[in-house]
Image 1 (cartoon, rainbow, N blue to C red):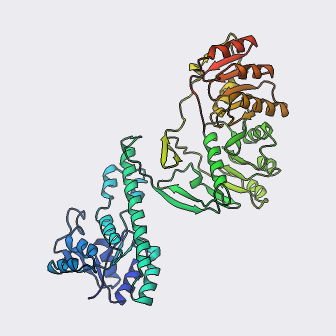
Image 2: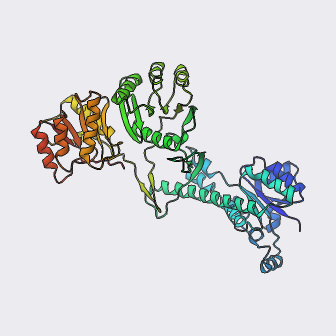
Image 3: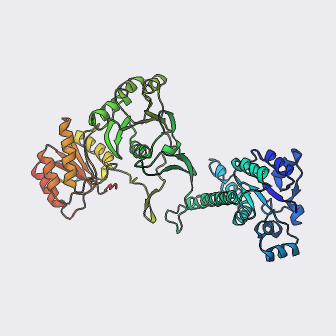
Amino acid sequence: MRKRALISVSDKKGIASFAKKLSEQQIEIISTGGTKKELDQAGIPTTSVEEITGFPEMLDGRVKTLHPKIHGGLLGKRSDQKHVQEMEENEIAPIDFVVVNLYPFKEMIQKEEATQAEAIENIDIGGPSMLRSAAKNFADVTVIIDPNDYDQVLEELEDKGQTTLETRKKLAAKVFRHTAFYDALIAEYFTNSLDEIEPEKMTLAYEHKQALRYGENSHQKAAFYQSALPESYSLASAKQLHGKELSFNNIRDADAAIRIIRDFEEPTVVALKHMNPCGIGIGDSIYEAYIHAYEADPVSIFGGILVLNRNVDVKTAEKMHQLFLEIVIAPSYDERALEILEKKKNIRLLTMDFAKTDKHELEKVSVLGGLLVQEQDLVPEDPSNWQVVTKRQPNEKEFEALKFAWKAVKYVKSNAILLANEYQTVGVGAGQMNRVGSVKIAIEQAEETAKMKDAVLASDAFFPMDDSVEYAAQHGIRAIIQPGGSIKDQDSIDMADKYGITMVFTKVRHFRH
């Protein structure tokens, strides 16, 4: 019996050439709609689906391949005599090849002007049904969803007269991944349209972006995947202008850095090392912001990541060029500034769209056997709701420093203590098992750089005891900001009053694990 191939594709790249070579192998081509029209125009003999099913295409094309003579031809097992007999009795001929790709649902919903009605019309029903039927019966059917697989199929047909079982199985697996991805996109579209943040099933759709040399360590395999609906403000969407490919650790660190800087509107530079900011500086210009970030910790910035929220000018680039930096990320670079930075072969230079910072994507964290999902820590900060709980009120300069410190400390790993003046961080104590340990680290760093003068202290969570306040006071701190909420808050307040410290409660904590 002559073999048959059913071809119905939205992406018509290379399809005429592929179908022509199938036809030359004496494979009958069944087709429908726009695909059939294109093949007919190319002079390739085709049989319409309507001729096979005896039913016309109907309901604006919604129903054309959903028929037993199609799915029976795909699902019938050639090695099962009962299947063969039933197919013969019902005049169902086998279909040996399925070449299908789906309506462009993803492309449609990415259009800003797309309506829900247009999105719904681009939900493919017949295509996934045929693909799944064919993939289920990969023992007998070759199913192709990706034009990149045409050549391999043709090579095997020309060499062996048929595809190998291994190839059919690989193509079937690819189909099931693709249809699952397609359905996940649809599910996400409707879930988001209803503002559901805790659905009973979590469907995620990501596409392979980059193979990585290794993961956190050289013995760990790793890869980078991008959200199916890319966000412009994302490392996955960044354009790399120069340097080596990003590593696993580069991507994680850079992601942490761009999360920080989006909270700052003024010219800002964030220097980051191992997921923690080692320096955040603001200024009237990006050059001034860079100087403040660098001077915040001129030791730790070495080999770190820099993110700047303004164009990189020549003056700033010349200063940055004096350092060893792993990565620089900015919205743009002056041409000459780029030339200066590119003199170092391995520095990674990236650009991103800083105009669209979507802060509403849910955060997802994998745990063994599960997934944690939460909203991002985006609580609106309103200093007018803060409470000064001590006898002494902060002066204007202290209050500006407290606001800056509170904005910065939320991005330090807990237990987090951060010292700052009104334009730069000066000490960071991150990730300690007790809070007073973080206080000591932050103060020691500030003292080493002689930046304790005018420094204020921010704590991401409340002080469980008054020892941190006393230690800070003994080292010159005169203003503290913290959430409050401890059963021993009064002890900390009393200790602050003892040393003439002003203390502000925000009533919001910012744990970051």
